[in-house]
Image (tube, rainbow over all chains, first blue to last red; front, side, top):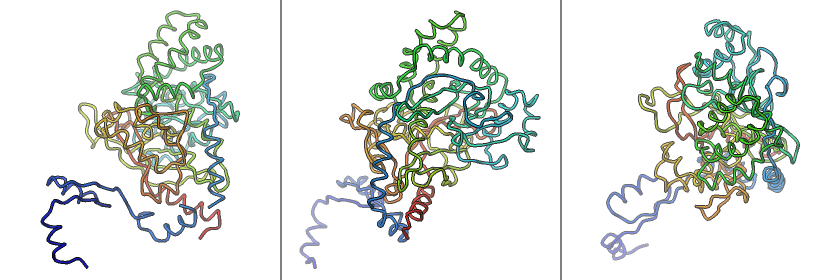
Length: 60
Length: 416
Protein backbone atom coordinates (compact mmCIF):
# COMPACT_ATOMS: atom_id res chain seq x y z
CA UNK A 1 0.00 0.00 0.00
CA UNK A 2 1.21 3.44 -0.87
CA UNK A 3 1.20 5.95 1.91
CA UNK A 4 -0.55 9.28 1.75
CA UNK A 5 2.88 10.83 1.55
CA UNK A 6 3.69 8.83 -1.65
CA UNK A 7 0.41 9.88 -3.23
CA UNK A 8 1.01 13.48 -2.37
CA UNK A 9 4.44 13.26 -3.96
CA UNK A 10 3.00 11.68 -7.14
CA UNK A 11 0.29 14.26 -7.55
CA UNK A 12 2.42 17.21 -6.55
CA UNK A 13 5.47 16.39 -8.67
CA UNK A 14 6.03 16.39 -12.38
CA UNK A 15 4.43 13.38 -14.13
CA UNK A 16 6.13 11.13 -16.69
CA UNK A 17 3.66 8.63 -18.15
CA UNK A 18 3.80 5.37 -20.08
CA UNK A 19 0.40 4.73 -21.63
CA UNK A 20 -0.54 1.20 -22.73
CA UNK A 21 -3.44 0.46 -25.07
CA UNK A 22 -5.93 3.16 -25.95
CA UNK A 23 -4.03 6.10 -27.41
CA UNK A 24 -6.70 8.62 -26.39
CA UNK A 25 -5.22 8.86 -22.89
CA UNK A 26 -1.77 9.57 -24.34
CA UNK A 27 -2.97 12.28 -26.70
CA UNK A 28 -4.95 13.97 -23.90
CA UNK A 29 -1.87 14.10 -21.70
CA UNK A 30 0.33 15.26 -24.58
CA UNK A 31 -2.15 18.06 -25.26
CA UNK A 32 -1.49 19.24 -21.68
CA UNK A 33 2.31 19.09 -22.17
CA UNK A 34 2.70 16.02 -19.96
CA UNK A 35 5.61 13.82 -21.14
CA UNK A 36 4.07 10.54 -22.31
CA UNK A 37 5.27 7.45 -24.16
CA UNK A 38 2.49 5.48 -25.84
CA UNK A 39 2.74 1.71 -26.24
CA UNK A 40 0.47 0.43 -29.00
CA UNK A 41 -0.99 -2.78 -27.52
CA UNK A 42 -4.13 -4.82 -27.92
CA UNK A 43 -5.23 -8.01 -26.15
CA UNK A 44 -4.09 -11.12 -28.11
CA UNK A 45 -6.57 -12.19 -30.80
CA UNK A 46 -8.64 -9.08 -30.20
CA UNK A 47 -9.69 -10.40 -26.80
CA UNK A 48 -11.30 -13.59 -28.17
CA UNK A 49 -10.28 -16.24 -25.58
CA UNK A 50 -10.96 -19.25 -27.86
CA UNK A 51 -8.91 -17.80 -30.70
CA UNK A 52 -6.16 -16.79 -28.28
CA UNK A 53 -6.05 -20.37 -26.96
CA UNK A 54 -5.74 -21.74 -30.50
CA UNK A 55 -2.92 -19.32 -31.26
CA UNK A 56 -1.15 -20.33 -28.08
CA UNK A 57 -1.23 -23.98 -29.17
CA UNK A 58 -0.02 -22.93 -32.64
CA UNK A 59 3.10 -21.39 -31.21
CA UNK A 60 2.62 -17.65 -31.00
CA UNK B 1 4.62 -25.52 -32.89
CA UNK B 2 7.37 -27.41 -34.71
CA UNK B 3 5.42 -28.44 -37.83
CA UNK B 4 4.34 -24.84 -38.47
CA UNK B 5 7.82 -23.43 -37.90
CA UNK B 6 9.41 -25.96 -40.27
CA UNK B 7 6.71 -25.39 -42.89
CA UNK B 8 7.20 -21.64 -42.66
CA UNK B 9 10.97 -22.03 -43.01
CA UNK B 10 10.32 -23.86 -46.28
CA UNK B 11 7.86 -21.16 -47.40
CA UNK B 12 10.43 -18.44 -46.75
CA UNK B 13 13.16 -20.46 -48.45
CA UNK B 14 11.00 -20.61 -51.60
CA UNK B 15 10.11 -16.92 -51.44
CA UNK B 16 13.67 -15.71 -50.99
CA UNK B 17 15.04 -18.26 -53.47
CA UNK B 18 12.79 -17.12 -56.33
CA UNK B 19 14.47 -15.69 -59.44
CA UNK B 20 11.74 -13.85 -61.38
CA UNK B 21 12.53 -12.75 -64.94
CA UNK B 22 10.27 -10.83 -67.34
CA UNK B 23 10.71 -12.99 -70.44
CA UNK B 24 7.94 -12.23 -72.94
CA UNK B 25 4.64 -10.60 -73.89
CA UNK B 26 2.10 -13.00 -75.40
CA UNK B 27 -1.67 -12.80 -76.18
CA UNK B 28 -3.58 -14.21 -73.23
CA UNK B 29 -5.43 -16.73 -75.41
CA UNK B 30 -2.13 -18.38 -76.32
CA UNK B 31 -0.66 -18.67 -72.86
CA UNK B 32 -3.05 -18.28 -69.90
CA UNK B 33 -4.16 -21.76 -68.77
CA UNK B 34 -7.82 -22.66 -69.32
CA UNK B 35 -8.76 -19.21 -70.63
CA UNK B 36 -11.49 -19.55 -73.25
CA UNK B 37 -13.48 -17.39 -75.65
CA UNK B 38 -16.28 -15.42 -73.97
CA UNK B 39 -14.54 -15.82 -70.63
CA UNK B 40 -13.41 -12.90 -68.46
CA UNK B 41 -10.94 -13.22 -65.62
CA UNK B 42 -11.29 -10.57 -62.92
CA UNK B 43 -9.46 -9.37 -59.83
CA UNK B 44 -10.06 -10.76 -56.38
CA UNK B 45 -11.70 -13.90 -55.10
CA UNK B 46 -14.49 -15.41 -57.29
CA UNK B 47 -17.69 -13.37 -57.50
CA UNK B 48 -20.92 -13.58 -59.49
CA UNK B 49 -22.24 -10.73 -61.67
CA UNK B 50 -25.00 -9.63 -59.29
CA UNK B 51 -22.55 -8.94 -56.42
CA UNK B 52 -19.95 -7.10 -58.51
CA UNK B 53 -19.36 -3.39 -57.83
CA UNK B 54 -19.99 -0.64 -60.40
CA UNK B 55 -16.44 -0.30 -61.80
CA UNK B 56 -16.12 -4.09 -62.13
CA UNK B 57 -19.38 -4.30 -64.10
CA UNK B 58 -18.33 -1.29 -66.19
CA UNK B 59 -14.99 -2.86 -67.07
CA UNK B 60 -16.68 -6.17 -67.95
CA UNK B 61 -19.05 -4.37 -70.31
CA UNK B 62 -16.11 -2.53 -71.89
CA UNK B 63 -13.93 -5.59 -72.39
CA UNK B 64 -16.93 -7.48 -73.83
CA UNK B 65 -17.23 -4.80 -76.53
CA UNK B 66 -13.44 -4.72 -76.96
CA UNK B 67 -13.39 -8.46 -77.68
CA UNK B 68 -16.21 -8.09 -80.20
CA UNK B 69 -18.64 -10.24 -78.20
CA UNK B 70 -21.14 -7.34 -78.06
CA UNK B 71 -21.81 -4.40 -80.35
CA UNK B 72 -22.22 -1.84 -77.58
CA UNK B 73 -22.16 -1.43 -73.81
CA UNK B 74 -25.91 -2.01 -73.37
CA UNK B 75 -25.73 -5.33 -75.15
CA UNK B 76 -22.64 -6.20 -73.13
CA UNK B 77 -24.43 -5.54 -69.80
CA UNK B 78 -27.32 -7.74 -70.94
CA UNK B 79 -25.00 -10.57 -71.97
CA UNK B 80 -23.06 -10.40 -68.71
CA UNK B 81 -26.22 -10.42 -66.60
CA UNK B 82 -27.80 -13.30 -68.53
CA UNK B 83 -24.88 -15.70 -68.14
CA UNK B 84 -23.53 -15.49 -71.71
CA UNK B 85 -20.10 -14.61 -70.35
CA UNK B 86 -18.10 -16.90 -68.04
CA UNK B 87 -16.29 -15.28 -65.09
CA UNK B 88 -13.41 -16.54 -63.00
CA UNK B 89 -10.67 -15.16 -60.75
CA UNK B 90 -7.29 -14.31 -62.31
CA UNK B 91 -5.61 -16.18 -59.47
CA UNK B 92 -7.17 -19.45 -60.69
CA UNK B 93 -5.28 -19.09 -64.00
CA UNK B 94 -1.72 -18.19 -62.90
CA UNK B 95 -2.64 -14.53 -63.54
CA UNK B 96 -3.21 -11.26 -61.73
CA UNK B 97 -4.70 -7.92 -62.77
CA UNK B 98 -4.77 -4.45 -61.15
CA UNK B 99 -8.07 -2.92 -59.90
CA UNK B 100 -10.86 -4.56 -61.98
CA UNK B 101 -8.18 -6.85 -63.40
CA UNK B 102 -9.73 -7.69 -66.77
CA UNK B 103 -8.03 -10.59 -68.60
CA UNK B 104 -9.43 -11.84 -71.92
CA UNK B 105 -8.10 -13.83 -74.87
CA UNK B 106 -6.73 -11.06 -77.08
CA UNK B 107 -4.95 -9.00 -74.47
CA UNK B 108 -1.15 -9.11 -74.45
CA UNK B 109 0.15 -10.52 -71.17
CA UNK B 110 3.46 -9.82 -69.48
CA UNK B 111 5.10 -13.19 -68.79
CA UNK B 112 7.28 -13.53 -65.68
CA UNK B 113 9.08 -16.83 -65.18
CA UNK B 114 10.43 -17.92 -61.83
CA UNK B 115 13.72 -19.46 -62.99
CA UNK B 116 14.16 -21.33 -59.72
CA UNK B 117 10.95 -23.31 -59.99
CA UNK B 118 10.06 -22.89 -63.67
CA UNK B 119 6.50 -21.63 -63.09
CA UNK B 120 5.14 -18.62 -64.97
CA UNK B 121 2.70 -15.86 -64.05
CA UNK B 122 0.84 -13.35 -66.22
CA UNK B 123 -0.50 -9.81 -66.06
CA UNK B 124 -1.87 -7.43 -68.70
CA UNK B 125 0.13 -4.28 -69.58
CA UNK B 126 -0.52 -1.11 -67.54
CA UNK B 127 -2.74 1.35 -69.41
CA UNK B 128 -1.61 4.56 -67.70
CA UNK B 129 -3.48 6.81 -65.27
CA UNK B 130 -6.90 8.51 -65.36
CA UNK B 131 -9.78 7.04 -67.33
CA UNK B 132 -8.66 3.45 -67.96
CA UNK B 133 -10.33 0.06 -67.91
CA UNK B 134 -8.75 -1.10 -64.69
CA UNK B 135 -10.69 1.68 -62.91
CA UNK B 136 -13.91 0.83 -64.76
CA UNK B 137 -13.45 3.14 -67.77
CA UNK B 138 -15.07 1.76 -70.93
CA UNK B 139 -15.52 4.51 -73.56
CA UNK B 140 -13.95 4.74 -77.02
CA UNK B 141 -10.78 6.39 -75.69
CA UNK B 142 -10.23 3.46 -73.30
CA UNK B 143 -10.97 0.79 -75.92
CA UNK B 144 -8.77 2.47 -78.56
CA UNK B 145 -5.85 2.53 -76.14
CA UNK B 146 -6.34 -1.16 -75.37
CA UNK B 147 -6.38 -1.91 -79.11
CA UNK B 148 -3.09 -0.04 -79.55
CA UNK B 149 -1.56 -1.97 -76.64
CA UNK B 150 -2.76 -5.21 -78.27
CA UNK B 151 -1.59 -4.37 -81.80
CA UNK B 152 1.55 -2.27 -81.26
CA UNK B 153 2.99 -2.10 -77.75
CA UNK B 154 2.50 -5.75 -76.72
CA UNK B 155 4.08 -7.25 -79.85
CA UNK B 156 6.94 -4.72 -79.73
CA UNK B 157 7.74 -5.56 -76.11
CA UNK B 158 7.46 -9.29 -76.78
CA UNK B 159 9.94 -9.13 -79.67
CA UNK B 160 12.39 -7.07 -77.63
CA UNK B 161 12.21 -9.30 -74.55
CA UNK B 162 12.74 -12.45 -76.60
CA UNK B 163 15.69 -10.84 -78.37
CA UNK B 164 17.39 -9.64 -75.20
CA UNK B 165 16.67 -12.77 -73.14
CA UNK B 166 14.43 -11.02 -70.60
CA UNK B 167 14.87 -8.63 -67.70
CA UNK B 168 15.93 -9.94 -64.28
CA UNK B 169 13.54 -8.40 -61.79
CA UNK B 170 15.12 -9.11 -58.42
CA UNK B 171 18.03 -6.66 -58.89
CA UNK B 172 15.71 -4.16 -60.56
CA UNK B 173 13.48 -4.12 -57.46
CA UNK B 174 16.53 -3.73 -55.21
CA UNK B 175 17.59 -0.65 -57.16
CA UNK B 176 14.05 0.72 -57.23
CA UNK B 177 13.79 0.53 -53.42
CA UNK B 178 16.97 2.59 -53.15
CA UNK B 179 15.46 5.13 -55.57
CA UNK B 180 12.25 5.75 -53.60
CA UNK B 181 9.76 3.26 -55.04
CA UNK B 182 7.56 0.93 -52.98
CA UNK B 183 6.23 -0.66 -56.23
CA UNK B 184 2.51 -0.24 -55.59
CA UNK B 185 1.61 3.45 -55.69
CA UNK B 186 5.11 4.65 -56.65
CA UNK B 187 6.83 2.97 -59.60
CA UNK B 188 8.61 5.99 -61.05
CA UNK B 189 12.11 4.60 -60.62
CA UNK B 190 11.34 1.02 -61.69
CA UNK B 191 9.39 2.19 -64.74
CA UNK B 192 12.44 4.20 -65.76
CA UNK B 193 14.72 1.23 -65.14
CA UNK B 194 12.50 -1.00 -67.30
CA UNK B 195 12.53 1.57 -70.09
CA UNK B 196 16.32 1.82 -69.85
CA UNK B 197 16.63 -1.96 -69.99
CA UNK B 198 14.30 -2.57 -72.92
CA UNK B 199 14.68 0.52 -75.15
CA UNK B 200 17.70 -0.64 -77.13
CA UNK B 201 16.19 -4.06 -77.82
CA UNK B 202 12.90 -2.46 -78.90
CA UNK B 203 14.80 -0.22 -81.30
CA UNK B 204 16.80 -3.18 -82.61
CA UNK B 205 13.74 -5.35 -83.24
CA UNK B 206 11.41 -2.64 -84.58
CA UNK B 207 10.71 -2.18 -88.28
CA UNK B 208 8.51 0.90 -87.85
CA UNK B 209 10.09 4.06 -86.43
CA UNK B 210 6.77 5.78 -85.76
CA UNK B 211 5.37 2.85 -83.79
CA UNK B 212 8.64 2.51 -81.90
CA UNK B 213 8.54 6.18 -80.97
CA UNK B 214 4.92 5.87 -79.78
CA UNK B 215 5.74 2.77 -77.72
CA UNK B 216 8.75 4.32 -76.01
CA UNK B 217 6.81 7.52 -75.37
CA UNK B 218 3.92 5.55 -73.80
CA UNK B 219 6.25 3.72 -71.40
CA UNK B 220 8.19 6.85 -70.46
CA UNK B 221 5.00 8.85 -69.80
CA UNK B 222 3.49 6.25 -67.46
CA UNK B 223 4.89 6.40 -63.92
CA UNK B 224 2.94 3.24 -63.02
CA UNK B 225 4.10 1.19 -66.02
CA UNK B 226 6.12 -1.14 -63.79
CA UNK B 227 3.21 -1.96 -61.43
CA UNK B 228 1.88 -4.75 -63.63
CA UNK B 229 5.36 -6.22 -64.01
CA UNK B 230 5.73 -6.20 -60.22
CA UNK B 231 2.38 -7.96 -59.91
CA UNK B 232 3.25 -10.76 -62.34
CA UNK B 233 6.54 -11.07 -60.46
CA UNK B 234 4.70 -11.35 -57.13
CA UNK B 235 2.46 -14.08 -58.48
CA UNK B 236 5.46 -15.96 -59.91
CA UNK B 237 7.18 -15.78 -56.51
CA UNK B 238 4.16 -16.80 -54.41
CA UNK B 239 2.61 -19.61 -56.47
CA UNK B 240 5.36 -22.10 -55.59
CA UNK B 241 4.69 -21.35 -51.91
CA UNK B 242 1.16 -22.77 -52.09
CA UNK B 243 0.32 -26.10 -50.45
CA UNK B 244 3.05 -26.50 -47.84
CA UNK B 245 1.41 -28.57 -45.09
CA UNK B 246 1.24 -26.64 -41.86
CA UNK B 247 2.50 -23.30 -43.19
CA UNK B 248 0.76 -20.18 -41.88
CA UNK B 249 2.28 -17.90 -44.55
CA UNK B 250 -0.12 -15.89 -46.74
CA UNK B 251 0.28 -16.72 -50.46
CA UNK B 252 -2.22 -14.22 -51.90
CA UNK B 253 -4.24 -11.19 -50.86
CA UNK B 254 -6.77 -9.86 -53.34
CA UNK B 255 -9.97 -7.80 -53.68
CA UNK B 256 -12.81 -7.66 -56.17
CA UNK B 257 -14.40 -4.42 -54.92
CA UNK B 258 -16.92 -6.37 -52.85
CA UNK B 259 -14.87 -8.99 -50.98
CA UNK B 260 -11.30 -9.12 -49.72
CA UNK B 261 -9.78 -12.59 -49.94
CA UNK B 262 -6.61 -14.28 -48.76
CA UNK B 263 -5.03 -17.67 -49.37
CA UNK B 264 -2.63 -19.37 -46.97
CA UNK B 265 0.02 -21.94 -47.86
CA UNK B 266 -1.11 -24.60 -45.36
CA UNK B 267 -4.73 -24.40 -46.46
CA UNK B 268 -4.08 -24.66 -50.20
CA UNK B 269 -6.26 -22.73 -52.63
CA UNK B 270 -9.14 -22.07 -50.23
CA UNK B 271 -10.17 -18.39 -50.07
CA UNK B 272 -10.90 -16.71 -46.74
CA UNK B 273 -13.07 -13.69 -47.47
CA UNK B 274 -14.68 -10.72 -45.71
CA UNK B 275 -16.29 -7.49 -46.89
CA UNK B 276 -13.65 -5.22 -48.38
CA UNK B 277 -12.93 -1.91 -46.65
CA UNK B 278 -12.90 1.67 -47.93
CA UNK B 279 -9.48 3.22 -48.53
CA UNK B 280 -8.58 6.36 -46.60
CA UNK B 281 -6.71 8.76 -48.80
CA UNK B 282 -6.52 11.84 -50.96
CA UNK B 283 -8.80 12.64 -53.86
CA UNK B 284 -8.18 14.29 -57.21
CA UNK B 285 -9.71 17.75 -57.68
CA UNK B 286 -13.49 17.57 -57.94
CA UNK B 287 -13.90 14.22 -56.16
CA UNK B 288 -14.60 13.24 -52.54
CA UNK B 289 -14.98 10.12 -50.42
CA UNK B 290 -18.62 9.97 -51.51
CA UNK B 291 -17.43 9.12 -55.03
CA UNK B 292 -15.13 6.29 -53.96
CA UNK B 293 -15.55 2.58 -54.57
CA UNK B 294 -14.38 0.10 -51.92
CA UNK B 295 -10.91 -1.38 -52.33
CA UNK B 296 -10.22 -3.45 -55.44
CA UNK B 297 -7.56 -5.39 -57.40
CA UNK B 298 -5.01 -8.23 -57.38
CA UNK B 299 -2.26 -5.67 -56.84
CA UNK B 300 -2.03 -6.65 -53.16
CA UNK B 301 0.23 -9.44 -54.40
CA UNK B 302 3.01 -6.83 -54.09
CA UNK B 303 2.28 -6.42 -50.35
CA UNK B 304 2.26 -10.25 -50.11
CA UNK B 305 5.95 -10.24 -51.15
CA UNK B 306 6.90 -7.35 -48.85
CA UNK B 307 6.52 -4.33 -51.13
CA UNK B 308 3.81 -1.64 -51.38
CA UNK B 309 2.57 -0.63 -47.92
CA UNK B 310 5.13 -2.98 -46.36
CA UNK B 311 7.98 -1.04 -47.99
CA UNK B 312 6.51 2.39 -47.22
CA UNK B 313 9.77 3.32 -45.44
CA UNK B 314 11.57 3.24 -48.79
CA UNK B 315 9.19 5.77 -50.24
CA UNK B 316 8.43 8.79 -48.05
CA UNK B 317 7.02 10.52 -51.13
CA UNK B 318 4.27 7.93 -51.42
CA UNK B 319 3.20 8.44 -47.80
CA UNK B 320 2.14 11.95 -48.76
CA UNK B 321 0.56 10.84 -52.04
CA UNK B 322 -1.67 8.24 -50.36
CA UNK B 323 -2.48 10.47 -47.38
CA UNK B 324 -0.65 8.25 -44.89
CA UNK B 325 0.82 11.16 -42.94
CA UNK B 326 4.16 12.90 -42.77
CA UNK B 327 7.16 11.50 -44.59
CA UNK B 328 8.75 10.75 -41.23
CA UNK B 329 5.91 8.32 -40.49
CA UNK B 330 6.64 6.15 -43.53
CA UNK B 331 9.22 4.10 -41.65
CA UNK B 332 6.68 3.34 -38.92
CA UNK B 333 4.48 1.57 -41.46
CA UNK B 334 7.33 -0.74 -42.40
CA UNK B 335 8.26 -1.40 -38.75
CA UNK B 336 4.63 -2.27 -37.99
CA UNK B 337 4.48 -4.73 -40.91
CA UNK B 338 7.68 -6.38 -39.63
CA UNK B 339 5.71 -7.43 -36.55
CA UNK B 340 3.40 -9.64 -38.64
CA UNK B 341 6.03 -11.15 -40.94
CA UNK B 342 8.29 -14.16 -40.53
CA UNK B 343 11.48 -12.48 -41.71
CA UNK B 344 13.12 -9.67 -43.69
CA UNK B 345 14.36 -9.89 -47.26
CA UNK B 346 18.17 -9.46 -47.22
CA UNK B 347 18.25 -8.66 -50.95
CA UNK B 348 15.49 -6.03 -50.93
CA UNK B 349 16.64 -3.46 -48.40
CA UNK B 350 15.72 0.10 -47.48
CA UNK B 351 18.84 2.31 -47.30
CA UNK B 352 17.18 5.07 -45.25
CA UNK B 353 16.21 2.49 -42.59
CA UNK B 354 19.81 1.31 -42.10
CA UNK B 355 19.32 -1.24 -44.88
CA UNK B 356 16.45 -3.01 -43.16
CA UNK B 357 15.09 -5.77 -45.39
CA UNK B 358 11.46 -5.44 -46.42
CA UNK B 359 9.08 -7.44 -44.17
CA UNK B 360 8.57 -10.82 -45.82
CA UNK B 361 6.19 -13.72 -45.26
CA UNK B 362 2.91 -12.56 -43.70
CA UNK B 363 2.09 -15.05 -40.91
CA UNK B 364 -1.65 -15.27 -40.20
CA UNK B 365 -0.87 -16.23 -36.58
CA UNK B 366 1.05 -13.00 -36.04
CA UNK B 367 -1.66 -10.90 -37.71
CA UNK B 368 -4.41 -12.28 -35.46
CA UNK B 369 -2.31 -12.36 -32.30
CA UNK B 370 -1.13 -8.76 -32.67
CA UNK B 371 -4.29 -7.29 -34.15
CA UNK B 372 -2.10 -5.58 -36.78
CA UNK B 373 -3.71 -5.85 -40.21
CA UNK B 374 -1.59 -5.68 -43.38
CA UNK B 375 -1.38 -2.12 -44.75
CA UNK B 376 -2.02 -1.72 -48.46
CA UNK B 377 -1.28 1.27 -50.70
CA UNK B 378 -4.00 1.53 -53.31
CA UNK B 379 -5.62 3.54 -56.07
CA UNK B 380 -9.25 4.57 -55.59
CA UNK B 381 -11.83 4.03 -58.35
CA UNK B 382 -15.07 5.96 -58.81
CA UNK B 383 -18.03 3.89 -57.61
CA UNK B 384 -19.92 4.42 -60.90
CA UNK B 385 -18.96 2.45 -64.01
CA UNK B 386 -17.07 4.25 -66.76
CA UNK B 387 -15.46 7.14 -64.84
CA UNK B 388 -12.08 5.88 -63.67
CA UNK B 389 -9.57 6.75 -60.92
CA UNK B 390 -10.48 9.47 -58.41
CA UNK B 391 -7.71 9.21 -55.83
CA UNK B 392 -5.16 7.11 -53.94
CA UNK B 393 -4.98 5.95 -50.35
CA UNK B 394 -4.26 3.34 -47.72
CA UNK B 395 -6.50 0.46 -46.74
CA UNK B 396 -6.21 -2.35 -44.22
CA UNK B 397 -6.91 -6.00 -44.91
CA UNK B 398 -9.99 -7.15 -42.93
CA UNK B 399 -8.98 -9.04 -39.77
CA UNK B 400 -11.84 -11.53 -40.28
CA UNK B 401 -9.98 -13.13 -43.25
CA UNK B 402 -6.99 -13.93 -41.05
CA UNK B 403 -9.13 -15.20 -38.15
CA UNK B 404 -10.88 -17.63 -40.52
CA UNK B 405 -7.52 -18.79 -41.85
CA UNK B 406 -6.14 -19.42 -38.35
CA UNK B 407 -9.20 -21.51 -37.41
CA UNK B 408 -9.01 -23.52 -40.66
CA UNK B 409 -5.27 -24.14 -40.34
CA UNK B 410 -5.76 -25.26 -36.72
CA UNK B 411 -8.51 -27.63 -37.87
CA UNK B 412 -6.23 -29.10 -40.56
CA UNK B 413 -3.51 -29.63 -37.95
CA UNK B 414 -5.95 -31.26 -35.52
CA UNK B 415 -5.66 -28.45 -33.00
CA UNK B 416 -8.80 -27.55 -31.03
